[in-house]
Length: 262
Image (cartoon, rainbow, N blue to C red; front, side):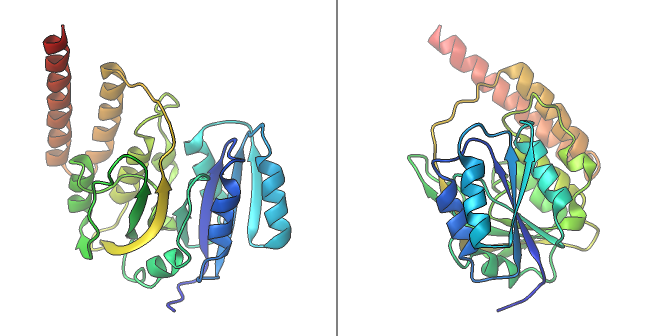
């Protein structure tokens, strides 16, 4: 097994009592043992904290941090701040990881800034990304994210901690949809020249689809697009224009759909 040192697994938690035990059990069972499990309780009002305390008594690698409800982005930021490791992995509190997930990510990490694994998706929606083993440059990765060819969630990925800065999490509180994409774009933009991203075909995360609803109007998407362009401008003007073009294309399609229905 490849040993790359301590890895922090950051879990933002808000009223997750129904699913939290299976999440924690999957993480403490990892074959890669050199981990710390940073559980950020984001103002839960259910039994999440009691569940965390139960598992903390079983596994001393668990660290519990409580804060007032500030949203998932703030919870992830707090987790990274509290991390003692050089590597960061994120998990949501209602999902699980196969027992070899961290081992698969770690054994490929030494020469890369980010390692991306594959996701097993459980739900009615079909996971649109194919497993592959390949390298991406910073510009290639950003292009694939904004064109929807690389999954932009925070999970199933191993990040070097040095990629994180205040700007990565600095986004408006109104962004409740697409904040993961912005965080990933910020992290990729912080990759230094010559470093690459590795994508591996191994399943390292099990995403369990839950009922959610986040309405998003054109104005909100426009504000998010502007924010993404600000991040992209640090790396490539071409990518900025591509993102603007894709936004206009989305808006035109939506307007046409509404006209057809009316």
